Image (cartoon, rainbow, N blue to C red; front, side, top):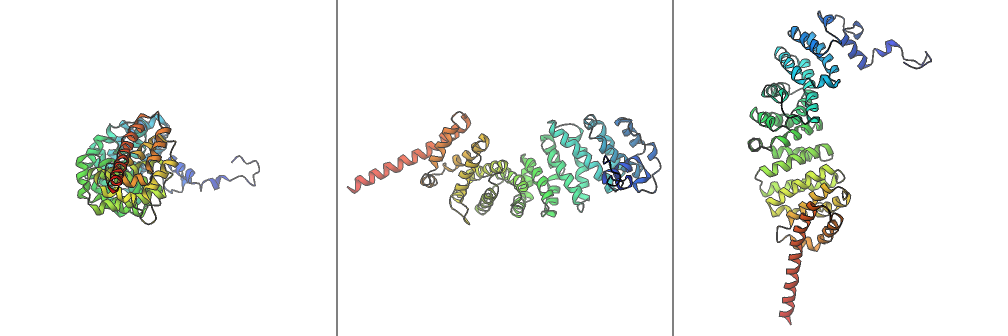
Length: 404
């Protein structure tokens, strides 16, 4: 529009083809938007009169679908203003009323759910975990829409992201579990397992939800572990999916009894994921958390890490991850915790000694000498290795004397 040469400057008519301009014209009720007939009442919509006037207008016209569509679009536009975004406690009751009147209108549901998601993002940024957004009423409405709109993938993506953010609240986690939210998320996850944009928030929500014992029991009954493994295997190249799925596996490993076959499958899959995403800190942390939990459950996991499978050496990968992330104390501590769990098994220690793990651990101890948390973990691990090594030397000495 600022191009001086009229021949090169975009025309006003060409601007009408831009999506942003089209949407703005619809909000303003302009015939230039391409809508032949402006709904009766649109001209009364209180543009630029503040959020309270708009909410009042929406309630007065609550039964008129077209009015609500335009009003909701305008509300979404207003939410980019900080003071309006902070007014969720006044806005949400109006949105609930609109949803109750227009339960059969997909467009209204989609617009309201977008607004809910924006409020949830704001609440997460402000560390808010209570209020009407986290109420049983909102949760039940969201799950109802989720169950009735399985074919609408874009809406499901919005809803799953909303539930993922909401599940950061302990109170909301309990309400979602009681309202059969875990079952509904699992249903959506299975329907859209090939869609990474749905898998990421689903796994993220499930990771937070199964922290509580009641929800963990639901997860077991829904065979959640197997589904998450399928997601991880299918999207193992996608770092964002691996991040959320590995976190879910970690929490499930704390809550669910696992047999040897499951332990082996999970361990091998995590090692493969670690190999593919060694440079992503959060993935390394999540996988180390998961491996530490699994090692605590069974010695089999420790040996699975030690014995190379398909050219993937688990121990070498974990050591390599240290060399990549040696400047991040949190990642280093999580890596050291894996080693700490491995040395709890007497038969594992000689193999760790033979691979000179003690050399790596001593180097870490020197580098992080001022970090008490890391040094404490390392001292515990090194003492086990040193005791085993001293015992092996004494045994060799006795055998030499006996032979003489």
